[in-house]
Amino acid sequence: MRIVPHVRRGALARLGDAMARHRRIIVAVQWAVVLVYAVLVAVPAFLPVPEAGANLLNNLTLAAQFAFWGLWWPGVIVATMLFGRIWCGVLCPEGALAEFASRHGRGGAIPRWVRWRCWPLVAFVATTVYGQLVSVYEYPQAALLVLGGSTLAAVAIGWAYGRGKRVWCRYLCPVSGVFALLARVAPLHFKVDREAWAAYPRRTPAVDCAPLLSVQQMTGAAQCHACGRCAGHRDAVTLSVRSPVVEILASGPRDVGRAEAWLLIWGLFGVAIGAFRWSADPLFVAWRQQAAAWLAERAWWKLLDTDAPWWLLTHYPAVGDTFTWLDGLLIPAYIGAVTLVLGGTLQTGAWAAGRLARLPWTVLALAWVPAAGAGVFVGLTLLTQTQLRAEGVYLPWLDTARAAVLALAFAASLALAAARLARERVPPVRAALAWMALAVPLALVGAAWWQQLFRA
Ligand code: SF4
Image: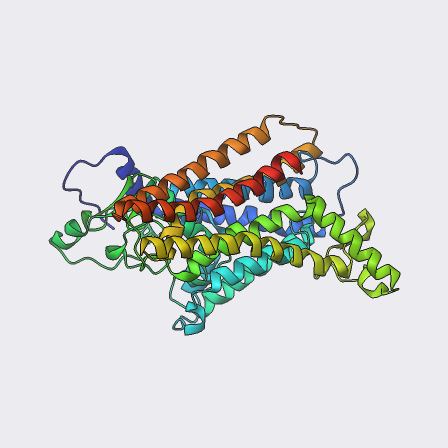
């Protein structure tokens, strides 16, 4: 693509333009990431369990675990909230492989079942719960199964549908919906100037947008993978800085479907928090003991057996880590209970706020995105902390720093809710009540985090 700027472009815009010009460099980086990813996912699964005394620097299994779960996951969440979905467009190995397969595949039309809007929610819930059951964060076999399985599915979908597109990433990836929510607050985005687009004097070939966006119509960063391929197109697409609140404040009902709002409410605040909590919650431990005693009294031993295969429930007798069938029932039950309490309260609050403000509840719920993103980030750093402690690294300030991140994000969500209600000119009493309906459920989530960080 030849870039012919009408006016001198700033440094950031030129960086975006360079992404379009130097596509080969980005592709080379993607293949390098594919290589590293393949080694870190596949090789540890065939290595023996790390011996006592092994550490991050001398054991590939521990290094891979730290890279994937201690650094990669929290890093991707922060990067998405700051720079948009640059992980998806520039670095993601699964996306690169899916696109490659699609370029060389059968190029079929995308069927209706693939476009089902609830896939991101269903896939996120399923992988989160399953990941807990097989201890995906701790065992390389489980990581190979979950991550490798997801990559194989991405390649198969890429091969089957689309021509050089990322059909998997757009519709089916388990974290695509999460990234689409979080990218809405990113200060960096590819901005489309529709007037400049329309005024461009020549015909141009269509942009090769891998996630199948209509670039001319693009108004936000939610679905854009920030790959930079369209930068400079028709002198109308520019890598730009914006206020982190602008996309959420401007979102209408067409910009956020119910499935996406459910993912925010039931997925990020419900299932994710349940998954972060269960292993450290004294309530869960007490439940488990009571249930085991109750079963033992009745001599119902089957549920207390630990003979499930490792791909169904955690089963590593060599290191004394095995789940009973009872665990296999209680862990999803606990996550489900947390989801019902937190998700149910938030959903009720969103509905109530929508009725009070006479606005779509989905649009109002978007104000919770900063709090949800901070919660996922903080939850993931719990694992980073566990891994660092195993290496003898203690960070005494970490809980306070996490509480500060959560407090800032929750305050941002409350301010966003107030700003949205003011922007829509909701009458003051209704606006105050609607704001309360959004604030009270968030206080419950805050209390859950407080309890986990400081009382657990
Ligand atoms: S609109 Fe499409 S081509 Fe442009 S940066 Fe986003 S993902 Fe890439």
